[in-house]
Length: 252
Length: 325
Image (tube, rainbow over all chains, first blue to last red):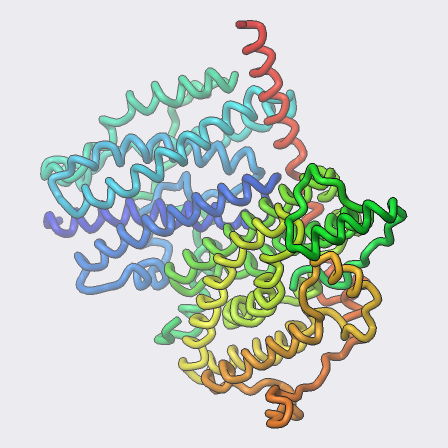
């Protein structure tokens, strides 16, 4: 793989994560438990879609003049490079917020490192996105603590959410040849190197939330290399891409 | 107009106080939460502000219906931002209602069990992507007609909420017009979507202003209190006059064969909507009434454990802080 190809894959991994998670979060619109959460979820989704436009915009430039929309709306499942964590169904509000926290924790650490990327364009996107994500993390962590250490029911639900999602966490830290090439070029850190910082952060928050971290380190994989997504992604794309697919060539 | 057919309450208050109150209103002095006000004024305002707030909340549903199918990232972002603004409007308005002595939970329960209404318009479905443009252009356009004058309404907190809301609403309306313009200038299929949206949203938009003032027994009192500034018919006429040239520019046909410019009046003549349909919708028989209310009830019921959990945590924290002192 050439360096440009590896760089493009890296950009797709960043942009597909924000695209798919932004889509999932937006599914909550009008259905949240309380008005403040409706506002916060829409705001989070909006930030993530904005970040998608930047990451996929750059990926498109690298990939022969495609637009971010071409990449979002005209690829099939096997071309998506997001981690499986962001594509699983929302579940209840507890699972949605737990997923957000587990992702935000990784996202904020990753973007922090990208601030000093050797590629100016990457550093510029990270500069904008990291401010937004700092807020996402603050909010999702607070909510995880509040619900974990709330009532017996909310505690049980948050523990169930954590147990369900934990096997999807490991994929964020798996490094492959693409990561090695990108890290060697100083564009991004090697994902495996972020794990200690991540574990420390997550443990701190989960302890406050009185939740128990599952012991297993088993990790479902297959999203960020596109080898095997979950069954959920196809349904998500069939909804998200429908207009573009049904009316090809139209301008919206 | 998100508040329709708000009944104004009669007041059995001390005539001297009432006269003093009316004099303040006539002098354009704002009424603030701690000021004396007639019971009828308070109750009518709670009903009107509450109905407006509920409309913002229920209004998230027809628009949210297209967020996951928005055709471009830009359109998705614009729609998300709009729906977020609307939830924010709901929040300001619930706060304004709270200053009148009714909590957000109480007023929410009244929406959920059907004691309070929201605008009839949100009981119509959004069926194709052009509907999202039509909602911004026509529905927000109609809402603005009413909300702009309400910036001068007599109740301070309501007036200030309206000032903030109007800024965002006019932005939404421009975005809606831009979205439908893109469709009207697009492929034959897109034009068909735009015309279809126009056909379905025209009369329901006219209904947003409420029935003719001739039939509206409550208008006079509300107008004297300056919680209603213009008559329903005035606003409806203004909306039609503004919208017809915009539709012509888009090349869309307004589904009213009798629509004509009346040189003498200096206004368009137009057909009244089918008011029996309006009353059906108000009674709960619109195309989406049952589903909209069911969706809001489900969100509220499913979210109970979240609200309870966060409240329990906040109490524990507070108790911990007190113990530490």
